[in-house]
Image (cartoon, rainbow, N blue to C red; front, side, top):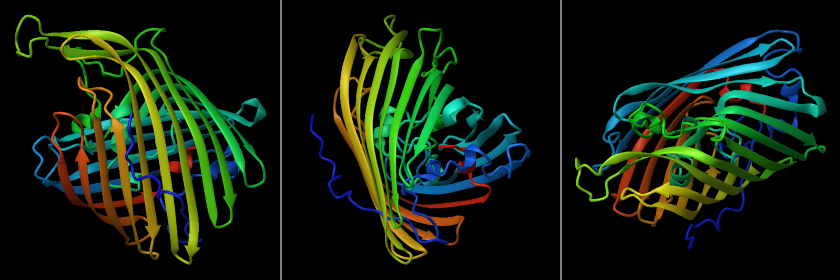
Length: 410
């Protein structure tokens, strides 16, 4: 297995100066303060009910000669998301995100998250339950409209299906060591869903019976997740190191099997399998302030996947795949910043094993704290027998009200 990503350059990064917009790939160390465990942004005391809401709009136009994507050569509202959060007296808090999202074939109303936090656990622990973005990797908690680059790296699209949203429970616990911190989480889910607003139907494809391909069914089709993360903060630079795992012993997949490659013959059928899927990953994020209003930031993730799959001609296979992605950003001033993203992975769900890659550059102009215009240029090679393409475009995002992350503990 050969990894040819240009990730060696990912070695430094920087938090923005106070009062300016923080670089989006700056490590999220808000959990070290533990402010939400007692009061949080939703109230000044545990007994004071409060509610907040906000919205985020993501408009994007992508231009390319590629024939296989419906979203290109048009201006679309990729995401119009409304999110709300409420303090539930002494119990904890709840939050939800609803998104009217268009992948190029019309808009779909997607429930991205709807979960609650239980604060009343011993040893400073918290329990999350409902539908939420699983705590795996350093970026799964971030919606694509909040992501530093205009498009998601191809690795997570292949291995996760986009953002990995699960329905289940997840326990968290953190330890503060005076600026440094260690936290862990473990979860169990009965269902998972890949969300990608750059794909038709947000990537949530369905089998002929109307069930999502990630759907779970029965006690034996559970999925477990785990994460361990260390955070370090030293005035003008921050860092996080993390390790994550995903294990699904019997995940339900439907595969269209056509052994003779002739559509409509009697041997064509939709096959239901319960397949094993294992994901192991490590990640690194670092940020550093260079000077007033100037910074640079870096992130990198490496993942190993070992999964079962049924090929389109019938046989069941077990495949091992490796992938990595990294991103570098630099802030030139309060208004201007730019970056580069590179992604490499071995395809895990196609009949033919192959290498794929995605990389691109982007330039941001921040009109204010909540308004951003971005131009970008990408190249994608999605793997064997799939069309390679270049893509350029412009993106405009703005938000108002409370930020979505104010409802999250970690």
